[in-house]
Image (cartoon, rainbow, N blue to C red; front, side, top):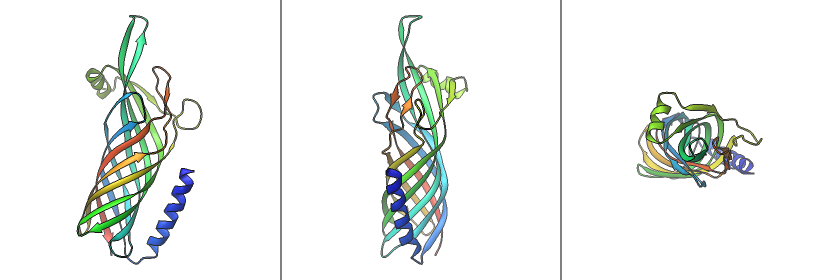
Length: 222
């Protein structure tokens, strides 16, 4: 349902944009700071990168439509507890999840002087993902950085134990636009459950992505 709504909205706004004369196209790059919500587990931020292409279709007045196609790294750190019968203790583990998406945002933008605000839907398609499981907090982070964590590829699909490949969400942003350069910050809120099955207790959680992206966009054209 979400994908159908997104497709209809995208076609509508792009058709409106293409009908206008002023079109600019360029590159977008930046950093992502992501987390997850709608889960009972403690979570932590993960940092990643984002890059791709974007366009700006000028409408009447201060309005424009900005679609794009970007590669975006998402992720979260999950803090898990697991009972170890060998020593009769409950151990703490950290599951460092990295998810790689192709995102297709379609934002409506309103600009006043050099300041702008924007909002709109986006579709995310997961291309790959990894889970790095290590014991403890800070020490576990060092173990993960050294490549010694228990690493496993995430499988996507609709079968038990697989993560949802498609994500629909809403983005909200603001920033400053100059002649060619656009500096912005966006908050993305995923609305689709990921259905991630953690490996320690084999528990499936309906967590959703959320995060902040800081970007630089270069737009060339009329």
